[in-house]
Amino acid sequence: MSASSFKHTTPQIVVFFAILVGVSALMHFLVTPLAIRSYAISFFGPPESKGHLEEFQGRYVVLQKDKPTADIPDKEKYGKEFIIDFSSQVRTEDKDGYHKKSSEWIIKSPKLGEEPIILLPLGFIILSLDIGFTVAIFLTMMMPSSVGFIALKIDRVIAHTKIKIRLNTGFNSEIVDVLTMPDDVLDRTANDNAHHVRTLFRKVWNETKSDHEVNGQDKFDEVYSANESASSFREAVLYARIAEKFSESILTEIENTSDAHDWQRNHTKITPALRLYMAHHFTEKYANNVTGFAYIGAAILIIIIGIRGLKFIPPTEPSLILFAILLEFSLLALLGVSLFYTEEEERMDKALEKLKGQNEIQNKGILRVAHNTQGLSEFKLSEDEAARALSKALATYQIPPEAIDKAVNAAAKELVVKALLDASARQQNLPSLSKGE
Image (cartoon, rainbow, N blue to C red; front, side, top):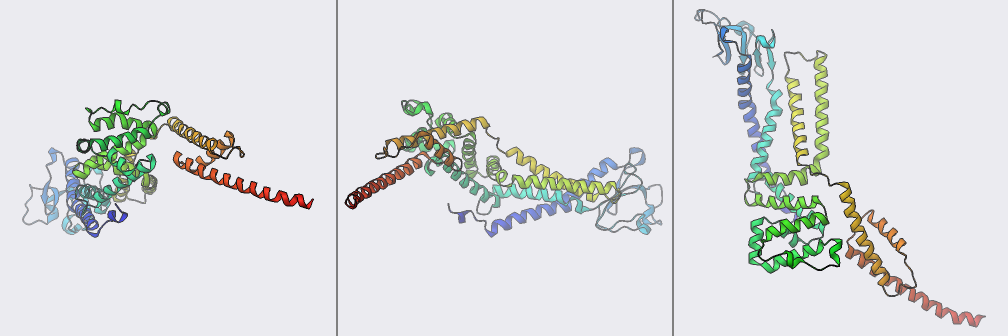
């Protein structure tokens, strides 16, 4: 698929931000106030000996039932020891017995001190945005790719991961498709076209031969039994050979891509799709950004806590501190999720051993071509010189053996032609020199 096939469209963007804004607004204006108010009533309400909280004109207070309520002002109808007011109404000292702006929440309880605690709803905006982003991500992941913002991203990651597998292994796209097919799809394909699947499997087998198998007998037909399912053979044999020949990380990419194909058939299977996106795109591209943001959030929290310690933030107005705490919580949660999906590093000794083995094979290929090329007998190329030249090249690039053979053959032919031309020129110059003498 072309790059334009994975370009986000206007409907996808509109749907994503509509869900984000809608869910965030619902959380901020409805769910969060109800949840915090219920928490305050449960933990900061009066004991049974002092009555219980009742709703009175949008606030929760302990009503003074022993006093007449007809001829007294509102502020005399309830006690001032317990007040929980999450309404958007303005309260005044003359009418209500306490001050409150329309944008403030009031919690007053002996457990919190003598002064009421003033909360600003904006202090909880980070929590509402977190939930809005999470819901928008999962919903657009389960939508069709034509309207799902995240669904299209996962489709793009699947295609790009298959390209990385092809570049890292040298397999063609057809082999990569077979290696990443879901098990049931592969088995159906093998039943419909057994010879074609066998041919592709044999290519993978030949490309993943180890050193002791290079000159040995090909045992593919013995291992690949006709009675064995293609998916079982792929998982038990080919996957193990790929991990041994290349690396565990490439095998992980293949397995995760195969699992993500299940999501393409059923978008409710979000776990494998999320694992592929996080492990092979997000953590690779944004790991440093997430870590940097987590440190910035920690710095902001430290500054605000320090200002609070210097008494520049009143203890009765903790909204700014709550904002910083929720911000750092969000960034640390994102960092934790990123680390959870980060692929484990391959052991360095195993990676070096595989690289050494590949370099030895390439060394042998160059020396074999160099010594077998006709016409190089006059231009001796020592094994030490060839090894040094190869090591220098491999320090920058990983060159396929067939590309090395082709390049050496071309260079050898050029050397032979140059040698013949130089010899012919010397022979033509000898008679003229003799006459001059």
